[in-house]
Each structure stands twice: as C-alpha cells, then as structure tokens.
Amino acid sequence: MQKLIWEYGLNINKGDLVGEEKIKLFGVSGSPRSGSTDYIIQEALRYASEKYPSETDYFSVKGKKLNFCIHCDFCIREKKGCIHNDDTKEVYDKFVWADALIIGTPVYQGMVSAQIKTIMDRCRAIAAQNPGFIKNKPGAAIAVGGDRVGGQEPSIQAIHNFYVINFALPVGGGSFGANLGGSLWSKDRGAEGAKDDKEGLKSMRKTIDRLMETALILKKTE
Ligand SMILES: Cc1cc2nc3c(=O)[nH]c(=O)nc-3n(C[C@H](O)[C@H](O)[C@H](O)COP(=O)(O)O)c2cc1C
Image: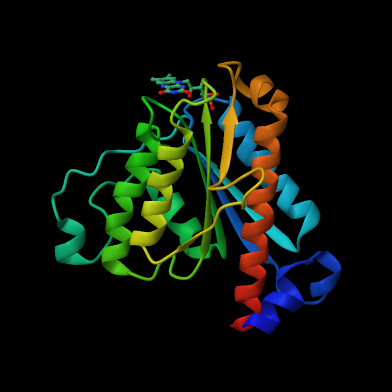
C-alpha cells in the first residue's frame, strides 16, 4: 500500500491512467437556489474532470421534492427502499453509481441545509437494503457560508459523520489551505461571492485533488 501511495498517490494525472476505467464522481449541491453552492460544486466537478480521468454527475436540490424521514421504519421492515416516492431516489441511484462523492451545502444556522440533512436522513432507507451502498468510497465535503466563520466546519463535520456512519471514507484537503474540506465565504453574494473567494477556491481544489487521488489509489488496489 505504501508503494502504491508513493507511485500513484502523489503525482497522479490523466496520463498515468490511460486506458483505465474513469473515476465516477458524483456532486450534490444542497442549496435551494442557483448561488454559491451550485457554483462551487459544478466548479469542483469541472476541475476534477479536467485534471483526472473521470466521469461526473450532478444533483442540485433546487426545485426538488425531498420529503423528511418520518421514521415509519418501512425501510427497515420491508427492505424495499423508502415509503416516500420523491426525488431522493435519484440521489440514491447516483450514490450507488459513484466511485467518489462530493456533498456541498450552504451553511444555515451554523449547520448543513435542511435539504442536505434530509438527503442524509433518507439514506437510512437505502442502507437498510444495501448497507454497503457507499462503502469504501472516498467522500469530500464543501460548505459555503455568508460569514467568514459562519459554521463551515461543523457543516463539513456533519457530512463527514454521514460518510463514517455509512462506511465511506471522508477526505479533507490537507493543511496549508484546506484542512477538513472545501470552506467558502460567499459574503452573501451568491455565485459571484464564491468566485471572488480565492482562499475558498484553493480549499476546494486541494480537497478535490485529495479526493481523486484517494479514488485512484482505491481503484488501483481493487
Ligand atoms: C436560513 C439561512 C441561514 C443562514 N445561516 C448562516 C449561518 O449560520 N452562517 C453563515 O455563515 N451564513 C448563513 N447563511 C448565509 C448562507 O450560508 C450564504 O449566503 C450561502 O452562500 C448561501 O448559499 P447559496 O448561495 O448556495 O444559496 C444563512 C442563510 C439562510 C438563508
């Protein structure tokens, strides 16, 4: 494993893996509008696909119907998925499809948006059917706040908890620029605010580099 990390983990680029399967990368935006989170998650997917052998897919909660988990335990009893029939099903399918995950959220009251929390809660239904639905898949978190220190880190941590609980592998972007994940300060200026946040963009790129590096190492060890 050490050898693999040395060989493939430090300087991976598209050319190193010519002819190999692409990393299937799925990004989720948890904002109900086309603003900073939508921008940064699409930018993360674009950055990953330009630099690494990858195929990307994207889901935004904007305009989607996402019912709360009502703890009816239908999923646990029947093992046929969720009793709700709504747009969460699309997310389930993409989680299963993906090799690597990015979950992005705006910060609301120092925490993830209700939409992201709902998606994470509703995954209990897919886990009841298939406990390994994201097992051993690396996952990154990106949070965008209107304030510079507005709750990005607790939001990132909540997404990491979701990964840990479901056997995925949370990754951050490392020290000197990213630490726990992508952390952006929009100054409540939507996509324009995120575009202007140079440090935040750097934290996203470092996090995506680590995510793709981890996904490629895992692919090599399959
Ligand atoms: C209900 C609500 C709660 C918010 N709470 C916070 C907060 O606790 N901390 C913060 O930094 N920004 C907070 N904001 C601001 C948003 O996080 C910020 O504008 C973010 O960039 C919005 O993302 P979007 O452009 O993708 O919608 C809040 C916004 C809303 C609507």
